[in-house]
Figure 1 (cartoon, rainbow, N blue to C red):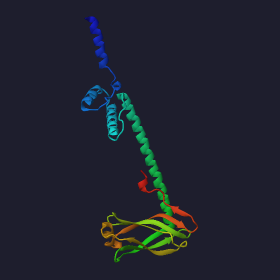
Figure 2 (figure 1 turned 180 degrees about the vertical axis):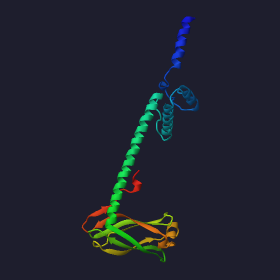
Figure 3 (figure 1 turned 90 degrees about the vertical axis):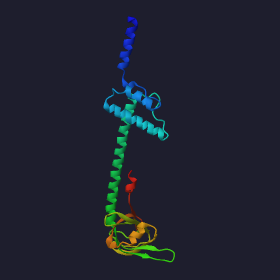
Figure 4 (figure 1 turned 45 degrees about the horizontal axis):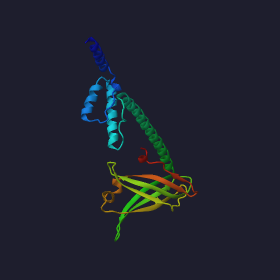
Length: 239
């Protein structure tokens, strides 16, 4: 009887002191298996419990989107280390994105300042020209060449905002037939099709210029000597 008691006692001691990180994750994370697993890993510290939970959630999400989920035979310890490494990689990736966004923004700000030194656009009138079949929105603008070279073309966008600062409408335009000597200005008219069913068009037409603010955002300047200025990536390309 004593011979049987000692092995049984040792067995209970070994089981009671087993490392929860050696437990193998169940292949199917159903409710019953999760309850068993939770009981086996309840001695983990709080940080490891959080990491394990995050790993299990990530694995299940992976399967939902066609992934394989956790590898067969993965232990609790391996899952925790995997989640730690994933978190480090995610942090590095986010840091890289943040740095790239900052670099692109700095490039755009510098280029914007260069553009603003080279050219300015002033809107001094707007109209709705009605036709038999199609009506048109016109903007009368003054383009000032502030650079030291003759401008042969300009492409950009004029955005109009209401008194709250909310965007009303954006008008994109491009003209590669300009002939503006350095230091001179040119009055020009840009035209767009008017759509009466578009709220932004109606609001723009029914609001006076004095009731709006606007911002000219240049995209490209062509110079007569064949050189040009191009804006870098937009804010939408940062992420």
